[in-house]
Amino acid sequence: MKKISKTALVSFVIGLAYLIYACIYFFGTSAGGTEQAGAIIATAIVMPHIIATGIAVIFNGLGTFMQKRAFVLVGAIMYAVAMVLFPMYFMFVVIEMVLSFIGYARMKSTQA
Image 1 (cartoon, helix red, strand yellow):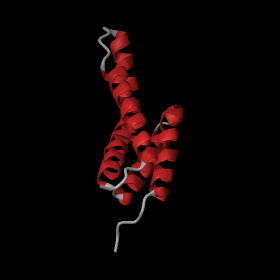
Image 2: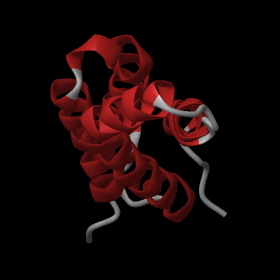
Image 3: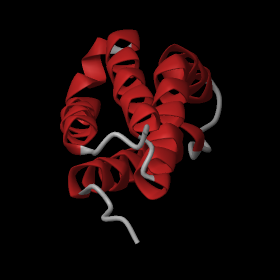
Image 4: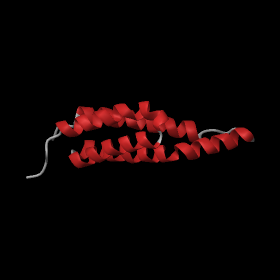
């Protein structure tokens, strides 16, 4: 059994926790009237960031548990894309991005 990259695993866990938090925060509102309209607009603005973060978490998890460097790299790049799509929330994905790049660099190449 191959060793799982600890940095990629930590990045996956933090990214998954942030994704769950973001989904609960933006999709769990049950306000009425103008508050609901504001929540819908805010969700629409943040939606590309959440989608990119979800894709990053999926690829990060696949790369971590299947020991595929390329998937970890795609996850790291998608964290960077998520950071660019909504710069106000950069602090929530910058740690995952850095850890994913470090995990990618430390993983052994599986090509013969």
